[in-house]
Length: 367
Ligand code: AMP
Image (cartoon, rainbow, N blue to C red; front, side, top):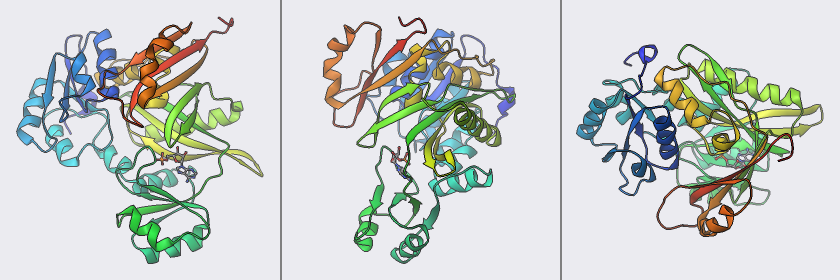
């Protein structure tokens, strides 16, 4: 590592962003507002982030020469997705500071390592077990019970690489259909609601969290986020504390999201951690229009070595994702009073593809 604490960018300096999706695009736009430049590295020539930066590197993550040239062009490197290949992160890390620290990827790329880490901190998760064969799946099901959720340890997103196992299911068939020998079995959590906390941490240890957000998924894809989540204050405090603790224990620099389940159990509601995303997150998009500082700006400030903002929420905020064909209704959304429309500039809408989002803020005076 090239010295996390030594990063101190000045306006005009350049941030390298790995990944060219909408998250990279919104990071680059936030950086531009602060007078910082970005260079985006992505293998996809149609990357929406390319449209908003002057310099782009279109190359594979295995292209060492391209990575080295990219590192030479920038002052600090960050990423917009968690599946950055570790070899690429190593090449870059030898040349420029990579923030958040690439070691964090080892924990968050692997659902088992992530759950073990959270458990070591004394934070609750669904009961889980390492599964490597149909025999160990049967053993895990015996211990954890049904229903349960089988997930690939790596590369799962938006419900991909997951299967719910219910009474009467053919266990061998479910195992084969997952197509991996490296999985985790989780108890199915009968959650009351899903929430997330977006936390920012600076290199000197300052932590700033946005208000707890409630998330509604459709077909495993985030559809609507609402802030603040309608949960009791003590539960919100607990969720914020968990996110802060995770950020601190990871010695994290940047923005991370912690997805959690709120469980209504006999002894009162409690919070279980589902997943950590070491990056800006869809459930934090509301902060662009709904708070004084956005998640994207917080991330840029953190990796630039600048002070974090103390985010102030402007009211009750709702963020609605425009998924697939829904983007075709953008003109309708443009006429909704109070709505702020974001279009990611992606190509053709495909089912399940996040094409844009809309934020609506109800201010405390009802306007
Ligand atoms: P994940 O990829 O782990 O974020 O899971 C995607 C979605 O699947 C979550 O947002 C939940 O809606 C659901 N899910 C995941 N794990 C569980 C679980 N153990 N129990 C109940 N629902 C789950």
